[in-house]
Amino acid sequence: MERWVVAAKRADFAAIGKEFGIDPVIARLIRNRDVQDRDEIRRYLYGKVDELASPHLMKDVDKAVEILRNKIKEKKRIRIIGDYDIDGVVSTFILIKGLKRAGALADTYIPDRVADGYGIHEHLIERAVNDGIDIIVTCDNGIAAYNEITMAKEKGMTVIITDHHEIPYKETEDGRELILPPADAIVNPKQPDCNYPEKRLCGAVVALKLVTALYEACGIPEKELEDFLELGAIATVGDVMDLQGENRILVKEGLKRLSHTSNKGLRELIRANGLEDGPITAYHVGFVLGPCINASGRLDTAARSLKLLCAETEDEAAKLAGDLTALNQSRKALTEEGKEAAIRIVEETEIGQDRVLVIYLPDCHESLAGIIAGRIREKYNKPFTVLTKGETMVKGSGRSIESYSMFEELVKCGDLMEQYGGHPMAAGLSIKEENVEEFRRRLNENCTLTEKDLAPKILIDVPMPVSYINKELVEEISLLEPFGKGNTKPIFAQKGLRVLSSRILGKNRNVAKLQLSDSTGCVVEAVYFGEADEFVDRIKNCGSVAVTYYPEINRYQGRETLQIVIRNYITE
Image (cartoon, rainbow, N blue to C red; front, side, top):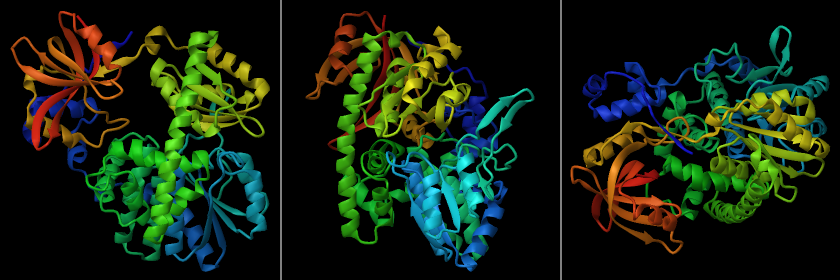
């Protein structure tokens, strides 16, 4: 059963509204996103790129720049080892373009998801040695590769890690002991002694900080960094980082540039998906463009997405964009098959009773495990890990809920896994097949989640009568964009609404259009997306309905009308 909870954060909303020229409702929405003092509010509403923190605050950035400049002068060969997801691909592109601009002899290798697995491995180090590589630079990986980095150092290589994942640790009698690889420089804001104020950066933005400092040291004009802003925005949204603080400014400014990008690959990908005639939003990045970039790393090779970003001709870019768009369509179909298989196991076996769901789908493509885990997590509001059969061992990807740190729970089962890493909300792992059942048992044995934790919580920003909605308020809400993790679309609520009429639209009968009226006689258009038949059946004979909603302006054939989009409902 859903729990509807009203945010109860307090402030003088009228005073804030007057000071910044915004409706008090907007002031309340901003406060609900943990933006409190006046300077934070100003940055939230109007922050610019020049307000971002200096890269020199990040631990080891200057050391990494010094190493790179010396290697560039000595004409040593540099290899960038990235990752096969959107953050890893974009990180790799930023580093290769930045290093080459600084005069480096650099190349890249993005591990193959199936053949290589995540991150840097011993065979990749051997290959680098055989290729005459002197220095390895990782991006979006490396912080958990203690043994591999040790091997690289033993072979006389220089290693720079750029990463944003959690620092591995072990519990000892004296407390938590961090396990840092013996790299020559580690650029990761999650290090406890790193002074960079924003800890929630994606891997691509960490790489961008290094390139920013490198350009400065090499005397390369700062203006040349502007092309990287849109890429930082894409990676931040695609890797589901919190859209707060620095991330919010980066995404906001990056999205502005994306509609008129000079990158031929991005331009053709936008065209291939029919988005060339309007502004690109965080939604478009997260659910249209990002999945296309991710698709090659899932079903083919991420090198194809990197080639798209590096494309020098429109013909090459157009072909690659078309291929990636088609791959994403295939990915969608395979994902749906895997999701349905997972649902059947949850619904038809005892696994469904677990508080932490672990499902083994040996025939599922391992690249789809994370997407499927996310979909099932949303459906059941339980931490969910999908395991698939890899070439040498079982691989898995998990997605969590706010009250369960997946990474910390994996640490407790570290002896069962061959490799693991991630964040509180998402993680990846490799495990021997014979350990799968024990892994599932141990996670649930350690689990302290309560029924309250597992009940989906709907956080309502403002209980607001629909009669309060007007065009000006809706337009002011757009000041809060871009929306995403950590800066969610506002949710309003009202109870006691009467249903005046309803009808079902769409060939899949997945849209309901209705008219609602409140106690003052105010009538509002409303739309509901989902199981429309079930929705209409439940509301048509009820006395009234309570809804959570988001207001918007519906523009159709030159006409503008106010409407609300219903997110949740309860019949009264």
